[in-house]
Image 1 (cartoon, rainbow, N blue to C red):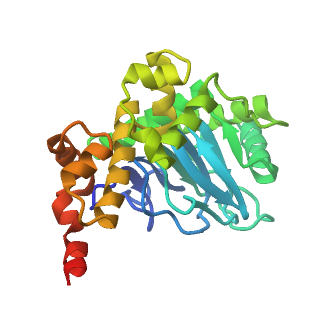
Image 2 (cartoon, rainbow, N blue to C red; image 1 turned 135 degrees about the horizontal axis):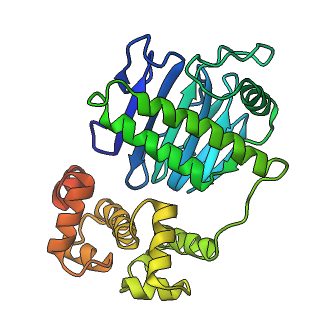
Length: 316
């Protein structure tokens, strides 16, 4: 956060990052929040266990997720559920770009043989609590697909978190967390027995195209326009832009610029005798001035300063 790599909003009891809640406000809510990672990160969460059951939603983007030594690749719309005794981590090893929501609720257990006890402000019926506890306790499925209702509940909770402490009573947040748990139970009922892995039309095509831009400089440095990128994937610009934001948490053009900057940064270090203008043009930028402006925004320094340490060693 201090380095500007992500934006994060969270409410917490205990040692989790975020605004610290008074002990008697929503007891059992270990933490709730969301982060927005613009672009691939250079860090990830270490394997850990939580003090409660964690329910998370990757709203947009892509991220690696590991639980019980099994790896998953999350994409926009994936829900994860981890229990207090499960070792898990986010990032493979680093976080990808994305908007990520989480809720960790302390249900009074740390081991599988303990009995679940819901916080007193959870308003589900006793039968619903038992059903949800049994399902979350025993299911072997770690990743689920979100539903519009569950997605909406996470987004509404996020608004409450962002408004704190102005909205200090947190009555709305209490309602949205209950809505979230009920929506989760309904989603699990609908999906039980099989993981919904059906992808939206064109998603795999766009995903492959984005990976190509990231891994292949020859592709990233072509003279792309929005229309050309969408046409390359065989769809209109509106659908292409929507899928790109879902997969990469950025617009197609911003993603393309990030890929070009990544390639240019490598060239600045690898080719210290090559001029900055040559590298800028070879990386797909129309002018060195536009390249410098984008580079400063991404790396918080000029292209010349970025290569200075290596230039000095090279000349020595």
